[in-house]
Amino acid sequence: MRSSRKTGRATDTTGGQGTTAAIGRSLDIYYRDKARTERMDRLNAAFVSSGGLAFDIGAHVGDRTASFLRLGASVVALEPQPRVFRALRLIHGRAPYAVLRCEAAGAERGEIEMHLNSNNPTISTASTDLIAAAPTDTGWKDQIWDSTIRVPVTTLDLLVAEHGMPDFIKIDVEGHELEVLQGLCTPVRALSFEFTTIQRDVGHACIHRLSDLGRYEFNISLGEEHRLQHGEWIGSSDMQDELARLPQSANSGDVYARLV
Image 1: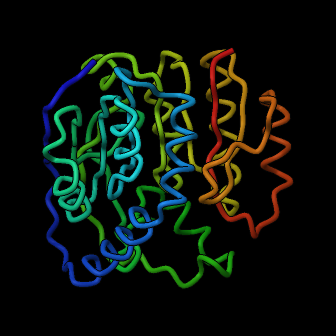
Image 2: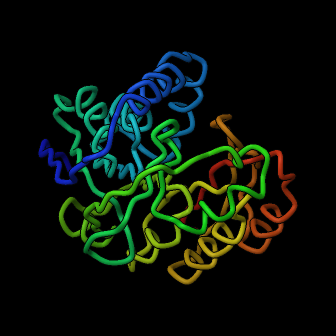
């Protein structure tokens, strides 16, 4: 399905100088590394092709949206942070096959409190559990979530009803991944969700949720490698074991799931 509707509804009343600089750093990281872009496109091409549909949940500045568009797919991209959303809209707002929405995804439609990290908006979150876990790891302990806003929430089921069944869903929402999956009642062909080693329990719960939805097999990509670790996809119990064994230094990555 192809669409060109863009919407934006959340209101940001916080200061933005630190956020503006941080968004600039994100643009450098996510758009100026040619090798990373090529790896990302190769990986995404395994799930999305020309004429397909992808959902980008937690789009940030839209590097994954850009990849899906380069592959010829339509994209529905959600980013709840108003200042980050403005950057996303500046980059992709004229793309004819991108739907950009300034809202979060969750278990049910409504509103949710978003905790903003103005110096590092890539880890702004709706998860108080992630904020509580951050001081337990040296790589996270200096992070500060310095303000909150209320943002609108939709569900994956509502997005499917509105835009059609996607070929692929990317979920990167800083500890809120399970709630996003709880808003999906129909199995999709393939998806990915981010995990962190400070919240392995969220990753485990997401695997259980997907296993309840359908018969999935799994793979994993660490950090910003954009490369699947396993030539042969593995079952849910093996994926659970792998998450448990990862060293704390692995920090984060993406679990991929596809229907068997």
